[in-house]
Image (spheres, helix red, strand yellow):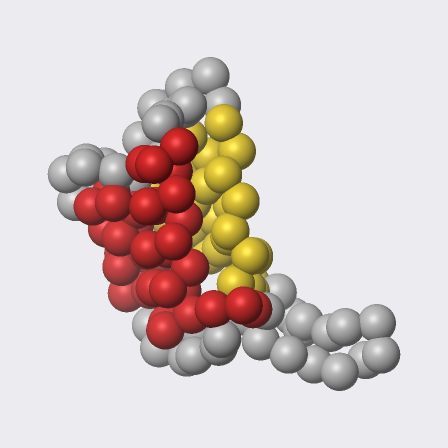
Length: 106
């Protein structure tokens, strides 16, 4: 089961609904059942650049076992689009990183 952590200011809607949508997006992209991925949100108090300008910027980490490049690419692309819509920010403001771990099950 891939684990997804979203670090950002709270989404504009329900956090639980956003996490459910994110988990399902990754599961679908990887060919897993809807409950085949887990997502959590870690709240960031603010997001600023070095000049002090605030911006909506979202960092997403996926921890999962090694998968074919096309599967990882499909999951990260779908996730970037989904998160950009949920957080109402440009897709360029969503950073997604896949971290390969020995196993993606608890």
